[in-house]
Length: 431
Image (cartoon, rainbow, N blue to C red; front, top):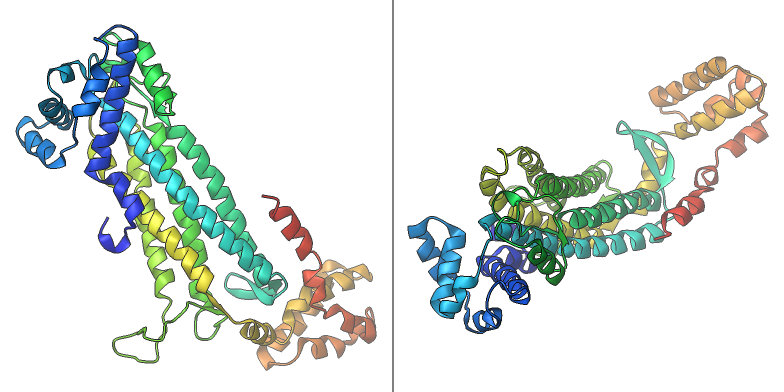
């Protein structure tokens, strides 16, 4: 991922130095286990640990010749650690190191993403409560439907990201496994107790059946979860983009005093952050299909998944980390315009009370079909003539014969649409 969309903490996880450091931890943990089992001489792991140095440049130089990253790594460690290093990797295969490390890196990344989600959830919750009873129009198909509140709109996104938090926790648990089972996963050349020791040491679970690799359905779930989170980001970003349109302007991205909106048009203030988040969401989702396709490998292993994971591992997690951070700041600094929400509520002359009138007519004896026709006729009149919906129905004798005018007026009450907002908030904020 390019630096423009990269935050330092997440980037560090995917740098070569961290990767090789994890490899060394795995090898040393395995060596400790073998010492305890008297498979290799006592003290090997301690001596190697004291002398070993991670030299990324040297490892890459060796790899140019040997064309194998794990061999290059072990050769580099041996150059510094001396003869004791020959006991490293005993009975192991490359995938034992690579796959266990990849899972650790995904878990490290996932932990950062959980922190990101916690920050976003806190901001969404605070904003939702602040605008709990701020009236706005609800829209379906992009068309005015019935009144709701802006706080309820935000609460919907809060709940979605709360589900995403739980999904990510589960996905992290799914990929937190360790495989130290040797070639084709039979433990022919390594004691299963070594795997158990390494797993416990690194706070992982053992992989029950690892063939020669950790099964990729685990990783597919992880990347699919990232894709779902990205889609949730896009849903909220798209809502902001719609609400910032000039003719709507119920919310607006923060615009700095020195900020420029267009190279050609000085008046422009564009929703660039929301649009950027839409693009980043596409990028994160693009990792899902390759992750799913990685499940189907030849026999006990091949490396068709390798190049894919070397790319989607860092790219998807780095992009999502950046996107979550950007979304949190966007919502925190979002300009919200309740007056424009009220203005937009009124532009359709109250036709959103149509269902209330419909229901009251049916309560007073009219068939639903006939009542619907009466209300729809008056609502369409309000649309076409820009006339008040209430006056239209109040002048329709077919309606006032069933609903007296004094009672009819009471139906046009915004409180009717907000009377259960507290119930929704109460059941949604139990976290």
